[in-house]
Amino acid sequence: MARSARVMTVLVLLALLAPGATHAAKLMPVGQHTPVALGVNGTVYRYFELTQDAPVRVWIEGPAVFEAILRWRFADGDDRATDVVVETRIDGASAVRHVLHMRPGGGTYADIEDASPGRSERVRLEVASGIHGVQLRLISPEGVVDVNPLSKELDVLPWRFDWRGSLRTTYDSNIYRYADDDVEDFADGERYERYPHETTDEFRIDPAFGVSFVREAPGSRTTEVRGSAAFFLATSNGDKSFAKLSARYTETLDRLVRASVSYATIPAYHIKYVWDADAPSTAATEYRSCDFRKHSLKAELGTAGQLPVELTGWWRYDDYGYDQDFVEYDTWSNTFGARVMARPVKGLRIDGQYAYRRSLSRGYDELGEDRRTSDDSDTTYDQNEYELVARWEAGRIHGMPVVLRARGKLLQRYYLTGNVNDEYHAGRDDTMWIAGARVELGLTDSTSLVCAYEHRVRTSESDIVPTIGDAKDYDADRFSVQFVVEGGRFLD
Ligand SMILES: [Ca+2]
Ligand SMILES: [Ca+2]
Image 1 (cartoon, helix red, strand yellow):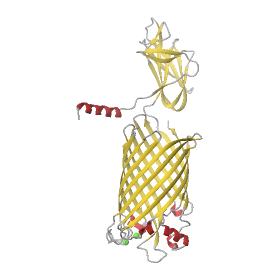
Image 2 (cartoon, rainbow, N blue to C red; image 1 turned 90 degrees about the vertical axis):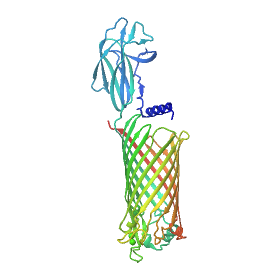
Image 3 (cartoon, helix red, strand yellow; image 1 turned 180 degrees about the vertical axis):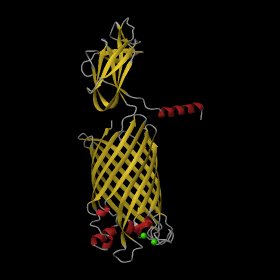
Image 4 (cartoon, helix red, strand yellow; image 1 turned 180 degrees about the horizontal axis):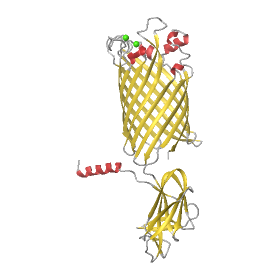
């Protein structure tokens, strides 16, 4: 690499790492104030007159820093430094006095003769969140101070508390993910010991609540701690109710990287009644409730700028623990993913993701057995996952913003067991398709309505059991309507 290119690279990296410039916004005084055009080093600024009779009042939205630049107006020929006392008050509360040592300066007035502005002095006040009135008064001596009132960003904002609650109702056409033959058997009342259910479809009520604490240094760093709880409450088949709890810590270096670690758990989840090789061979007990609990740990690292294309890599570890009858299903999996996010045109965001999963199952349940020779299922597999999501801010209906989202996902699962006793898994490949669409309507600034549809299909193929599809293929449709409320405030 040429030396100049190396220097250039270093400069670009330094520019990316440098904290963002603090933005200042000019504030307009309330009521009639004489604007004063004041020239310093060739630039003209607009100031306002502050006298003992006429305090300057401004409205400012916090959290922010109120900063007033003040210059004493020196009559021509007067070059004595002067101590000037000004007073500040926020929302009429107790006043703070500031003594400023004003000295003559090099500036000029555009429209005032016989006088020149002094050097600048500053008064700074931190303003809490919300809209506040700041008043500036001249106490002594008599004369004129020219004031330029500004609102500046804080270097570090106070912690912010955000919350989000939602209530969703979901219809699922095939809650147990049964093959068509099973659904028919259930409907015909056949093999009822397998299907001790009310229905094979389900209406669910899904309440969810999440809170997050965010601390931001504008332009340079954001820290977020988030916790959420989601409940999936089945109205007919109570055994299909479950909860998901999660927590996440995210650190963002604003124009460079975002890193997060998260944990999620499903304390208990019922799959369905599953044939158990170890159950005594009587029809009433051969099928047993198959349940698991799950713990997941995830780490993510990606770019975090406003780049047209963003890259993220992630790793997730999942631990599935099954109940006593099905410990052979206990599974530990590592998933490695890469995501590309692009914004090709304004309002459109496209996410493409590939993930590869290696999953290892116990595959036996008794002393003296091992995975290769047991009489149990071994669900060890490798899996490819491809996902494409498009999100489009589609404009407004009756003033309410509309966001459309479409999603397609393909999973290819290859069971790896070498145990030929396990004819349900040896030589079996599964393919799953998920396609979905969602409409989100912003009702107000803090509420929205989401309607979603999803279709999923699984097909199984096996070298050993050519008819495996009759037992394992399924499809399911899911419709949902969700109401979301969110809010937040600064904790200052
Ligand atoms: Ca077992
Ligand atoms: Ca066994």
